[in-house]
Length: 318
Image (tube, rainbow, N blue to C red; front, side, top):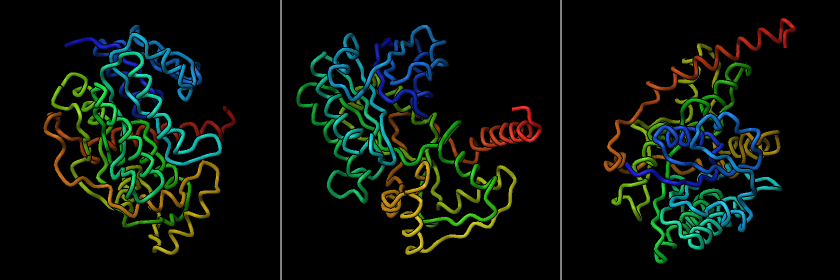
């Protein structure tokens, strides 16, 4: 297998950490750009991983750090906007700068993380429209010789995810769960399967120019997923599904809460089923991992750790 020199944007996030570890295990050289190098110390154990501190939104910094790379992987994304980070900046402008830096430095391969239902014109939310525009920008570089593949996953789950772990946190401490958009449908895809798709695409020429929808083997409603998380961590909580009007009101309120657990834009995204129309792409040749297979393995462990630290705090040892 050919060894690549790969620059990764967004490599310190949930999917990024899983991907960096697999790339390093495979012997690829990885250059990870991050704003705060001290937060990525765990990735420095790999001799082929170079963590550099830079601003990925600085076009000149991208050109500098893409030098010598044959592949760039763009995983950078946000679910909610803030004053410092907007969909336009993080998704659209960054995609444009990445393409320009790739072309300037002679990078041949670009793997781009998009999102299921991303569409620049008809996306249901600002998030989905910006992801669609970024995806189109990435693929537009094909006419200049850049070999592009993009991935459009449904919600991604796995160890240290922000999906089932967030559910577990809510279920652990809230006596009642009012749930917005309870009938929203998802086909959660395991992080290991997404990472595998990226790994295969590195050298599989059949993937060049393709846009792949990635989903897990089964579809669930949001309420079913919340109920499943409750069963895994062994708690019983009333989960009250809210109607459309109350869901919109709740989103408008929660987007002003710390961490923005739900926004009006999230509400709009959930009006479209996050479900693939076809099977998992055969080119990746992987057996899909189900929610029921993976989630108990990490959610139970996380729950045990959480209880342990709760006990320590109660005992005054933290």
